[in-house]
Image (cartoon, rainbow, N blue to C red; front, side, top):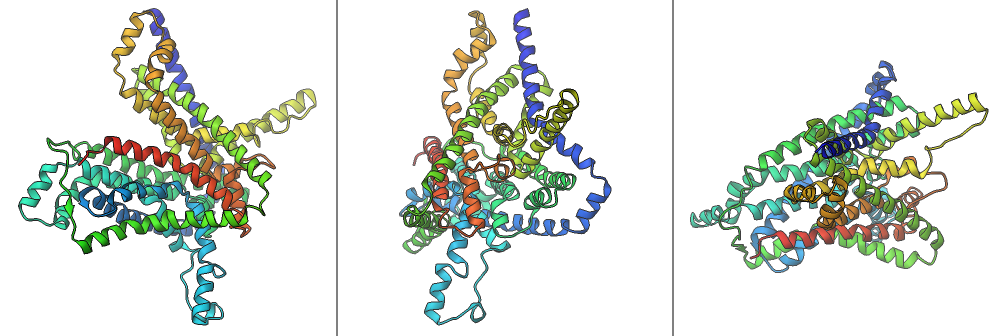
Length: 548
């Protein structure tokens, strides 16, 4: 018994230590923000802050409305109606998730800008000479950013809305039919109110992703909090100002986290299963069936098929002219970083989830869940929070070594792959932790009691009992972390070592130099990698969805 108690105490200490380690960047932001004095905050309020607030507000409102309209409508059509092509659209509507916002932005800039093929063809057809002869909506604008992000983020809402509609009581929907209510009336009177908590969660996730976006905003020259943090740090070298902007952004994100948690709590009372779970679908007339199919095709076409097709075409045309050795070097760097982070993330996430499971102390649970907040924070915020304490450590160590031994150590941690991997872990450890925690919840605690009765200690129980049962969850966690690291842009831009590039940073570099076709091979590789979690997610949904 004493050995068991000692083991539990060790796990508590390990879990708390890991949680505090990966929460260090957020504490450093608070310290740095307070070191700037009132004049920094006053200067921000009188100069850039109003513009950041305005653009961020309209961006979130636009993306929230766009994802709500597309996600809820397609979720209802797929789950509750029958039309030709529905089964294909069921999984195709998830495909836009494979596109990072900054890549689809690159594609449409090349397609729709003044010198792009669309406007060139319009000028050829109508005899226009220059931009003074006609008006074309500017792609590099706030409206363009809203459109791009809505096209790639609506699957969050579609996925949760579709699941919520399928989990609703089929008896209620049949009662609505018996009362001679149309599909539209049933949707607004029954299905939509019951699915509201899940829809709010989906819209909140899309809006948090919008707040975290950097590449699209930078390419479209839309100044938001995320681009402001990057520009304040790298443009003005104002660490306190960047930290204060980061804390302001975290205030916005905290609101959406609270909203998402509250909605999830409410959802427990609104998505109860019924005796009959299989719904009888509404069979649409020929005209309505065609309209439903076209409505589902539209976001897939413009959010995945068209940009993917253009990337394939451009990559086919330009691959002979690109430096393949540079491509393979960048791909190798991305795979190395993603692989190392995925392995470490799964290992650390599993340790923390298991330690939280064993502990009976509330502070251990809270500390473990604190790590989950990292995924909701934008890349520039994480990068800044990581860079500040490590740079301080390097300066302090270098000064001490010079004073004591007369030698300089330079940058021991800053500007190395170590700090980059650490930032990735801060950003994406929540994925591994959450997946491991979910897997452990499906394992009864009796397994641990039986293992201890057989003389196994806690480490042996984790290795020999839990790990084999968690193989699927561990693989899923590793895949999610791997793919997200491959797509990560702002943290990599801010922290990558000198003369070191990844697929994401090289593609972004080409885009800023208006060499978008040259970037197509890099972009296409990132999109292909992003398809793996989409395929995995679709398989999981098919296994869990009611069959009818």
